[in-house]
Image 1: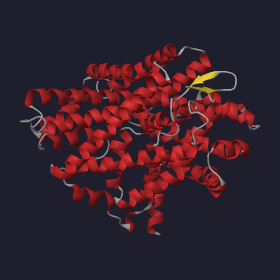
Image 2 (image 1 turned 60 degrees about the horizontal axis):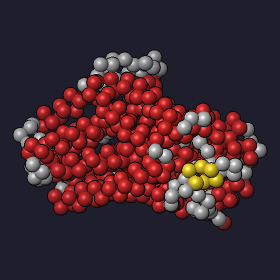
Image 3 (image 1 turned 90 degrees about the vertical axis):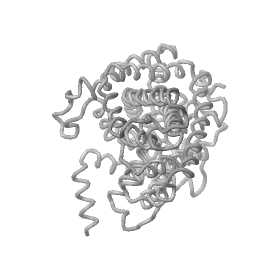
Image 4 (image 1 turned 30 degrees about the vertical axis):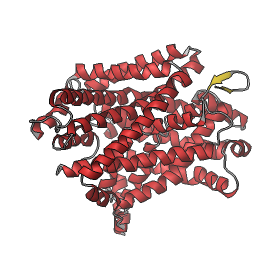
Length: 481
């Protein structure tokens, strides 16, 4: 299928369902499987979850629709789509800088995200070897102490050669799909891997339902205590809703450029946001029954995936097989996200530099590999190298953590904020009426959100990332008052 640009033909999705699966794959990633459950548990359980859903509807979904709308109407790489729409609306073509920032963010995230993908491959190898040696019915790493299982992660991240090679392998797999094009590669990874991901997610959740501490998990995640809905908890929910949908990295703008005119963007965006939220909620029901059944306390961040869960699998019946299935599931989610991240700069290189797709994808892969290897080494040989340590916001951060912090606290929120301003105040009302798929009061409410509410909330995310201590003190003062 091709999408017409008016003068040229552009490759597109073969169907609406293919676009939906690809977009869900772009949004669903490590943030859903690790960050959301940890954030929910640490920030008031049910109060956080309820406010998170509120934020997805009122912030994430309006910005998601805005990004897809820009891509579909512009029918080009993100910067050119911004430029075309701005000029058509009587605005400045300089708005393309916003999309260029998003493409740059996507490239930076890709470079360290594939390092994490390499870590997942490492654990697939560990559990796969354990299945072969001990059998699928045993607990994972039978005969190993908790300290020995815990030490596996430290040994891995300090081995710069192994993690660099795994990073390159994960990048190479991503390249193979992106280089084959939209229908021949990107669509295939979504159409086959996303159903497999959902199957594994539900299977492990059912396992935890019968063999884990499901009652404690439900209480941990969903008990609603209004007094816990503090300003800090609300801000954490806003941030999680924003990051969960992969906004601000030009991925949805890029994918939107391949959407046909017969697709209703509003309803489709709703399906994408709803599926992403469902995965986040189910992830908590998948992970914590296993953690609690093993008598462990949940930790936040990557420690939950690479340290706490391997501990938990070691005591469970069929823990070796469940651990292998879990990390295969995570690899599927990580790959669909990395494909989206690579596609944004690849599309830019094709349109801006006139390169063929395989050449553009190879250029992006090579550059990401260089930065990725440096990120991999930053947890080992380059652990003491802090390139921006003279800036308080990035003090003490190695390259991997620096890239994560730089994109998460600065470039992504800025990109999403300016995208909301662009759609709300620059894009012509006629264009929005034609493209949004909304009508009447719902359309007017969406315009209100992208003009006023979304920029305000995204500005709060930005300020809290730059001045975390000041923001925390402010919310504490407001709460005390």
